[in-house]
Length: 322
Ligand code: PBG
Image (cartoon, rainbow, N blue to C red; front, side, top):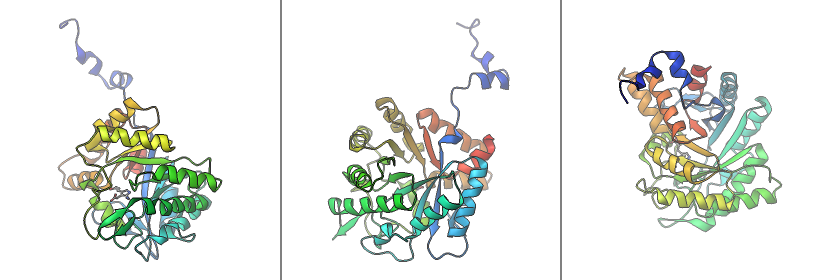
């Protein structure tokens, strides 16, 4: 009790504070999301995401080299095809934009882990994550397309497959297709608890993937639910997921914690586009200190239980921590 106990003693100087610090952001756990656009000859900065680009194949490889020099060991790729159709067929085209990007990175940036985001919304003309009939998204016919997409990415060099579509049964479908194609060694990181979130706005600008009608609430989760997130994670693990993800991160720290406390699998969290853009906008206005707030956010996501963080700040954070 006071005055014998004084909590401030352990805050007296930086060395002691460092000694008793409980949480450390791990650069090893960072994954940088990158966009690659078919037919682009030079990179375009994304207006709603300052400092992030829609890459050409060439600038994408350059960016991967830069990330590697900073210590970032993994990238997740989002491809934007020149032609979109109702079934998203470019998602699994052997020479699709994302497949080309994977091959280029594997060849030119050895040691960089290539993660493949498996979803159809960047590839479909209607912007939904699967097969549409009328105004309904059909679950089961979508599974086969997702599985083909995963296999085509593995063939192109993806070393970790990350389905982000939220169809029921997709992890099992992808696992069995990967296994049949000889990719038993490739792990799956499922976007297990992915919420229907307003924080994806800037991403949809970047990927031109906003749904042409309706929204994603018939497949992505209601932000109000946490028990349902545990059920989603449980099912994905039973279907063969190796890593489970919660997305977005900041408004869902309790979900990250609940998943971490309930299961033994590694937990990933996606610090999404809207979370990035808010910090960038406030930082640019001088309203907050961007570096300080970013490190505070990533520390919080780590503290909540994330082993892996997907973040557009990956390069900055790796630099700041080195
Ligand atoms: C594809 C996908 C999305 C994001 C990652 N994968 C968008 C969406 O569901 O609309 C969002 C990432 C971000 O906002 O940074 N389904």
